[in-house]
Each structure stands twice: as C-alpha cells, then as structure tokens.
Image (cartoon, rainbow, N blue to C red):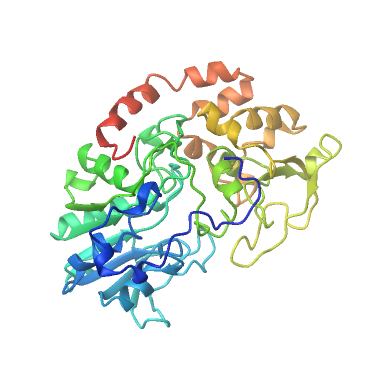
Length: 405
C-alpha cells in the first residue's frame, strides 16, 4: 500500500452506461471493488420519475465523469445540486465561502452549503422527492464532509425526505485511532465524539449518527444505502480523483490523519507547495534539518501560506512508506514529538495567535491534554494511554454500524 507521491487514478471501472441490459442478471463484478455510485443498475431505475437533489463535489464520479453529468444523461431528473467546501466542481480554496450559482455545464441550480447556509432549508427541499449524497471521505474527524452529511441528514429528517447514500471506500478505513473528541471542543473541524481516524465509510457514519442520536433533536433520517461491492476496511483503495485541492496525491491522503495535526503548530505542513501534508518545516529549523522547501502563493490551494516565500527546513515524507502506518494501525505522533523537541523557540510552537494560518491544536487533536503532553515530553505510550477508555469504548460502539468487515 506504499503510495508515495503519485497522482490519483487507481481502481478504474468501466463506463456504466455501456452495461447491457442482458448483463444485469449475471453475477456482478466478480470480486472487483465497485463504488456505490458505479453500480447504477441498483439505483437508476429507482430514481426514474423522481425529482432529485444531489450533494456532490469533484469526487462524485461514475466511471471517469462527474455523477451529475452521467446521471443527467441517463435521464435522471436532477433539480438541484448542493455544494460543500471547495464548491461543486472543486474550484474554491479551503475555508473560502462559496456562493450559490448556476452550473454552466448543466444549467442546474447549485446551492452552497459552505457559506451563510450550512444545510438545505425547507424551501430548498420543497420541490425534491429525495436527496443523494455522493462524496468521497478520507476517514478523518477533521475532514468536514461528515459534518455536511449530518446537516443534510437533519434537513431530510425534518422535512420528510429520503436520503440515498452512494457509498465509497474509506482510503484510511484501517485506522481507528486517536483521542475521541472532547465535546467541549466541538467546532467546525470536529462535531462528533469520534477519534481522529474513525474507521467508517460515510454510510456507516450516517448509521452511527442516526443510532447514537447525534442529529439535532435526535431526529432520524430515512436512509437508502447503495453499498460498495467487494470492500473491507482493510482493502487498499487508490482514489480516482483528489478529494480536495490540498489532498492531491495518495501519499497526502494516507499521511493526512497524522500530518494535519501540524495545522495547529507554528510549522508549515506543505501549504503553498504542490505536495501539502507530505512535508513539514519552518525557517527556524535551519541548521537542524537539511531538507528544505519554500511555500508560495498558489491560487486554489493556498493563497497566503504560513512562511510564504521563506525557506523552511524540516521533514520530507513524500517517499515515506505508508505501509508502516497501515501495519501499525495508528496515527503517527512521533513526528510531532520530534519537531517540538527540535524547535529552538518552543513558546511559539502551538501559538495560534501568530498567524491566521494556524488552527487550534486542541480542536484538531480533540483534547486539551495533547498539547500539554507534547510540551511535558511525555512518552508515546503515556500519550496513547490517556486516550483510554474512550477509544476502546468507541471501537466497541462502532461495530454496531459496520456494513463491511
């Protein structure tokens, strides 16, 4: 599973529009992993005659084309598109509000869920029979797609609408690790009491949100799940499309559960380069590390990165063997421990006031203890022990909602 810094493009599937009707009764897929979206024979007939809304982004593909474009050509009546962070076609930067618009390719109204409005309103849903959620997640608590999913579930439950989920594999499905979020630290980068690596597909998370009463008012959303064929949580999965502008290689996706924690430090973690989440450093580490990189303004990825146009020194993880992460089944916290120890100005290390590009390490980690433990020089064993018993309790609870081994 060692991905290194390679572009996306694995697990390609045939264009489902070329499937012949006489083939639909034959054994499906013969052991090949197939996403929910690609199994059009299971849901397109159900959609015919219905007014459909879709919660989608650039990862919502059938074969090699966006699912909106493909389903529209198959005769599905797509009335509205709901777009999350980065926009429907993925051309907005991280954290930038996205406005409502009309999709120029299809003429379909696009309603932004990343701006003043964070979930569909009664008016948005009034002319729809059901919603489809089809977005690739990466299995990490601070990746915001599961927050969008929960709000969409609430809107559907409150307005009596069915939600169809076209499930997709979790590329970090093996990972169930990290502190379970302390809910007093609830924020836009952590809304639910799950660990950093939650080990769920989006459909499994939806079942958990329903079952654990996490939706506002403990409402229950009616779910219609199209499962991934021939998938387990240990199945290696190379994403066919980058899930967001700064997760642009398979290496970045696999390192993300560990290296995104550096968003809460006075270190650049590759923002302002074409290999984010795979390099970490700062100008202050000159003379300590030989590897260097220089962040620059990159439209659509990072316009104002930390240490812009300054040479940063630190770790190069672009060729790190990610098989080690999979084998360990753990978030790597040794890099955080190492770089804090190496930092000559430790008072700055976790100071989010130094730049708007620095997030709260407490909110990212999900606990106030992590920062204090790194500063105190606690061992990895001591830090991991502090995640219990909540982590073990979560693992037991998680089993109730699994669709895959």
